Length: 112
Length: 111
Image (cartoon, rainbow over the protein chains, first blue to last red):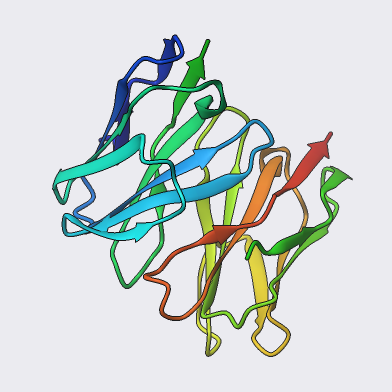
């Protein structure tokens, strides 16, 4: 029944490590997003894919690389993790022209 | 550019009303409202489109003044379940449906 799911829910890792977060949606949407929410709750878009094509690429360090193997999946790989990467990362999905976005439960990343 | 929300926080007693405002310096195509409870994901409430169409929640209403690039969310007869942080997300034409969110308004409803 889960609409947008993310794994893992929590991720604790050391600086310099590489980690991935996975997202899947079963809503039949064609557009998926990654957002970062910092400690002050500021919700900022990072990337968006429409039908596996990157359509939004905000000013994000090259260490962040999204990949969309198909319309239902969007993954986020982060290289050389830094302290400032600590945040909650939300995946979301929508129909491209309707743009009502449905958010996943979030992944809380803590970099030590 | 990030929309500006006001107030930053509001405290209500159950049954009271509240208005949350969102303003942008750019011409908007649509405004989206979300509510986020602590430790949870943002949940869609309302979308207001240029031209007056709106879709969303039964017990929450909103307005969109296209000329002033402002939107307001009206919460009437508040319930305890309304507590949370409310975010407006603004969309400008030609942005590939990108939403830019405000800093949020923390609403607390007390018994």
